[in-house]
Length: 454
Image 1 (tube, rainbow, N blue to C red):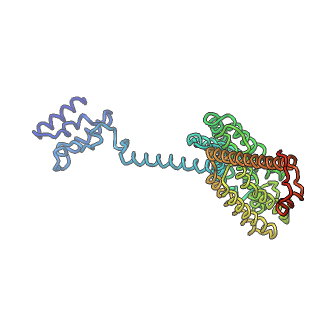
Image 2: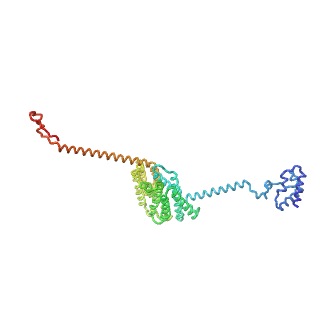
Image 3: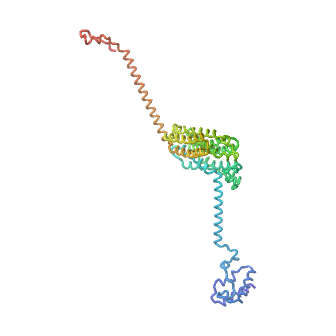
């Protein structure tokens, strides 16, 4: 039946219009393949044939107007996806991906305490340059900095995992990713474990095992000793100072492969610098630390007298570091002067805080500590003496010592010769009688005295 209707419709088209359009010839073919819709199309055909004629030939014959989408075989216009909707969907998906990456990037940035970690990387890089000698391996420097950044990020992330309840009680930390609920604890632990293992492995492969061991031990010391100790005893400040002093030693070991006395200048500066820095911070945030349940040194010192005294004492410990760096041949004499001036400046702020324990003076000492460290490290790197210069200075000092010793020996030998001559002349030559001297000239008639030759 449907074949007869199809042939009948095609005959009508060929008979009524000698030059049919291709779309009209395909109209009966590209309709929907389901029988119900075909019956509907033919009902439209017979109903349209009885209606008023139109200008279009297809409408005159009773065929419905074909959509472009149906001409290509689609079932209906509702199931067709337009290019504009596809572009809008792709744009929305791209925005979702960008927003997700931005969200996790911000969370990882805050979880890792990126600014503090970059300060740790700067101290490690400075130690690497100081331990490099003449030629600096920039690939090794980059690998050391990257490994240090990973390990520091891991330690800071674990610190926030352990202190999530304490951070939720403090105004300064309640908006961190874990207390605010932006990240889950398993997610943070996975992130910390991954970057910690990766950083340690990178240091072991690209630097040496001693540097990797220092990094791993520092991670354990910070996350598993210093972090719980903050809630137990005020000695946590000094343990944290040890943690901060290890990264420059790590850089020195990564470059030189050994721990030496010359590599202790920058770690000592980091250790003594952290005490006034954290004492000022603990004094400024003592109410917040008390709310969080941390046992800081300033909480047991209501007047702030001991806190200021500890800060002043450690500032004074910074004074001889410049002279030691010059005396050990690490830097030139200019650094000795600059380091002394810097230590005096931060000591002056600590002294003002000791004499007048106010928030303003504590903040001034805190800002001075922020300025001290980058200036100290910059001067240490700028005035450092390479191995060639150290060898030249040692050779010059040895030559001067040899010249001085040779001159001393010459002077001593000359003195000995002079003494021997004086003694020999005194023993071998007999004394002349005074009468002979007197009788030669005034009394020429007397016989001249004869002296025995020695």
